[in-house]
Image (tube, rainbow, N blue to C red; front, top):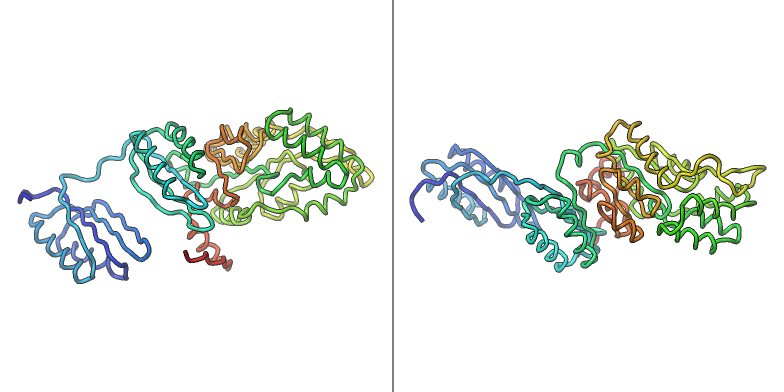
Length: 405
């Protein structure tokens, strides 16, 4: 090691975390009169790793000795590395890569990191978004365009059985957004029309047509009118029974509750029926809703729909309308769906998410979420599980503690 004065010093302090470590280290740096250029700190299972990049004083060896003495007093270890400048300027092509697994295996992370390296990109930072009931890790990546990175990692996601979302790093991720959600098999489990058909004796026939329509094999409007015709004669009171039979996707209430507190707006855009979706919107506090209206005469379903059908194009038009009502650009819209009739709205939204979707939809959406937890979408928006629980606690909602591994 030469005696030539370096431009910077990188101090890496590690050891068992306890109160006062960071304060003591900065007190030592204060006495040396150095400038702070960068700081990174993590605590993993009570073990602290603190990195501080500072300008090097004229008598840099004296500072090195003082830092080492402070670390020893704290029962910590420290490394002091000399440098010749500040951190490199961040390169173009900055992305957030969110990896979600249940469980998330080391092999999957190795594969993801390998593909990022193969692309010529660099992982600048890693942080955990959640550890229960799924493990979600957010990688800050730079050096390659997000579209190219997304194409590479989508294949790896399928191979490893994990969900990977790639989003450009921008302020949009932190701003208020409009969340537009499909209802059937997305916000709620199953298809409302199939629940209705169970009361008409045509459940199997309706289910077969629904499955083909969601795969994109049939024209949606034609298939919907065909299925609704099979509901003719059902008492309107069945709609109330079906509403109470609905089961929300796990985590749906958490997602809506959390984002509403942060000022987000919500819309339901469904190929289902207003008699169900309007009540669902009222119950969850959804701001807007658009769906098809079943005709009811003399207390019974006629087997017809009133007005235009909300089909694939209708969903996209509704998304544009609600974005205008809220006053946000399409880039600030998050669309969530699972079927072929969701494709247009997923395409025009700033972030289109295929939630437990058909293969056709997963192939074209910006990202996929295949774990059954609807609130996993929060991690794609940069919100950690710990932040969700802290916000709930502040509003008097106590969430169950995760199991200790």
